[in-house]
Length: 313
Ligand code: ADP
Ligand code: MG
Image (cartoon, rainbow, N blue to C red; front, side):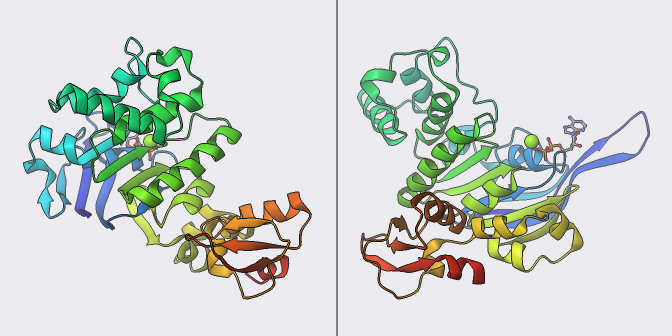
């Protein structure tokens, strides 16, 4: 669990003499094993908040606790072991191979070579980059989407319980982004990391976030599930930020499994219960079907979701 307590980052401007608060009195708890999307317009303090969690930026006031321990009191190795970090510009080392890039943190932590090697193979497979094909390549030989996968693998290398991600899919074209988001959600279903994901992309926040924390000018505007924000915005700012196409966004924030009802599923296209409802609608349109069969985590059909159910939702 990560707790921010009255966190503040103030920049004093000698020019104006007025202090500027990049983050102001921010108190927030990121639940264990969940993805919390840190959402908000450009410049609202998302990156500053994330970088304070792993001490790349020092707060001017307040505290950050990871499992009850103040991050300012953690040794750097301890922080590296606990917290993985995926940055916006991917940030792979261009002169190192893919395998060496993924091995960065295990090597800093002094893992035995064999253990590191095994871990690198395991992670490349996890992000669907065939180790035999990719381990010895350089970053420049990979597509943007493949590089981003390496970035995710590298952050997971030492199996940290906490993952911080800053616009992790931002540099990708929409198709590659969708695929990687989907892959990422599947990975998270088995890994159950505590993830803080910075994004300015509302769809991404509603799609991937178990919780969403919406920031406005350095302060918390609303914290809740995607459903909470879309259906129960607690201010005009929240409502305006989510925008006029809230209807489709809303579908993106709902899971097919939560809307499915009992019914005859025979012959219908199947979707996973964890799929968002907007994607389920896409499947209906693509397959020219008025309903889809919803398949639970165990592979059993848990119900039927029809076009009318979506209308009602
Ligand atoms: P974002 O939500 O887009 O990630 P940031 O956290 O990067 O926003 O920045 C929040 C605000 O703090 C912005 O207005 C930015 O200009 C300001 N800021 C960031 N770093 C500094 C700095 N070193 N000095 C002064 N202002 C800064
Ligand atoms: Mg940023």
